[in-house]
Image (cartoon, rainbow, N blue to C red):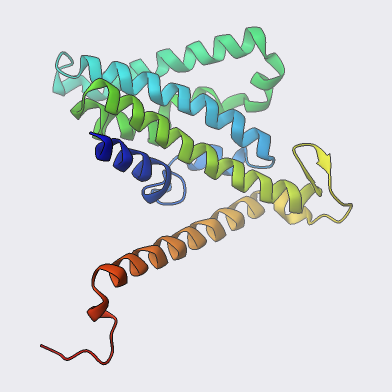
Length: 215
């Protein structure tokens, strides 16, 4: 069981990172990463919806008919997104304004629907909650990292703290968002590839030994 949760954690946060590996949730990734804090806000909201929707889908997985499972999943997700919106609108209206249109769009966020369909509908409660948590962490990390880079280079500040007066306006534009995203995807793929090669080399060094005899 411990190894199962370890696999869920590594897959959700790193190996199958929903943003850098699976390229899901692209709209908020590109639109809200102008600042690191925006990424944290959206990440927390998505993580909450992921965990709650995964939990409910898992509980109802034997009750929901297969023919209507997708509409049922969307209804469940929409319910928790509505809860988030109402809470933010009442307690944190400024944050609600910052997230704007992208908050209700969580309903159709591919990450949440994909986890409900591919994992929560086939697994028990606790693993489903863990899957939602770690996929949310992976999503939050990706958005925050991109937001930090764009904020530092585009505004010369981080978390609202001025670092220097030199700025590159390009990183505050839509084109800058696409460029930053592409660079991070490339770096992520490169690092994951290097880690896999190192693991294979450790397990089967003969595959990398040029002097090994061909059998």
